[in-house]
Amino acid sequence: MRDAVIVEAVRTPLGKGKANGVLHEELPADLLARTLKVLVERAGIEAGEVDDVIGGVVTQVGDQALNITRTAVLAAGFPESVPAMTVDRQCGSSQQALHIAAQGVQSGAYDIAIACGVESMSRVPMGSSVLPGSNPYGTMLGERYPDGLVGQGISAELIAARWGFAREELDAYACESHRRAAEAWKNGEFDREVAWAGQRDETVRPATSPEVLAGLKPAYYDARMAERFPEIEWKITAGNASPVNDGAAAVLVMGADVAEHLGLRPRARFHAFAVTGDDPLLMLTAIIPATEKVLKRGGLTLDDIDLFEVNEAFSPVVLAWQREMGADLARVNVRGGAIAIGHPLGASGTRIMTTLLHALEDRGGRFGLQTMCEAGGLANATIVERL
Image (cartoon, rainbow, N blue to C red; front, side, top):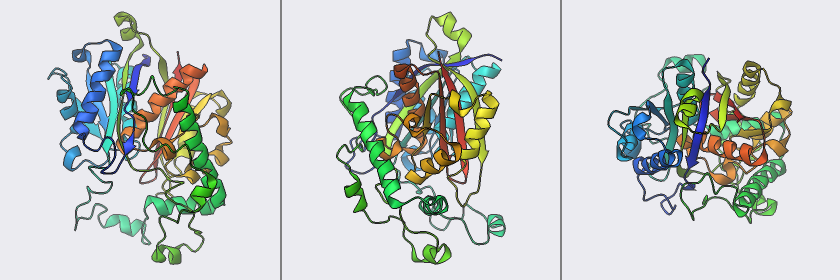
């Protein structure tokens, strides 16, 4: 099968997903368009050579409606002949876009494809696609889960309770995420991957400490849920959860033979893919079977992986994954994760791949594994090999 390789990857700095965030005034279509322009300019290819652009967006309503990826492609000045589509696998949307792009190249359906993602959570709040009076769950789901499913914050609380994490552990992990991200910015480790010179990820807090985080109140306490789940001790706060953010990222994927023909340097090869489902009540644990599945498909063990990127939706998600997998946390999210850098939903998959690629290059690693929990009890996992 033909090798699919990454030639270029860029991202925006991530802004706070609030009205006072640095990216709030920029419409998401424009934010993605600017990112796409930088991507092809850095790669030195003609935009008309791209066979398809696959973009991830979670909340596809309002400013993010109407196949925003196609809008961004046209806004970026790409030829009208370049097609585009927008996909939704919740938080893993642009990681799924990467899978579609790479698998299309491997199969011969594409020669060159772009995987990308965008989310402006300040302009299009999470959950706003569920209109008042609508019922996106239908009636049959309730027959299977008569007690009802729960929101992600409650799922994170259930994970913390099931794995027995103390509040201090969750806050310590969050502090380390901020420390690593701040250190990476200080050392210039994000400079190559971030498209806008002079801007930094807005939610990184170098001064965060366990004492500061200990003063935050539980974010998801609900009396009805407390009665239903008496095991919950209410440890999830704004400090040990990812913030809401605005941002975009894009990755250029092509056949290794195409890169050679164009005189471009392949930077990484897609080695293995997996996607799986898990308990939709716990919701955020599918990264565990997804990691096992992608390692098996890739013929690798955990020890073969030099760097891991595990999306930090909440501290207990990464810590439960680590406990089950036995991974060395020193190799996980080495430049900080979403708790510090941010989690702009549909953009996070390609943002994380962009960071993973550059970290592998800077550290001389060979294999990198990326996985993300997703609403509904889903997870994608991807292994790339640095070239």
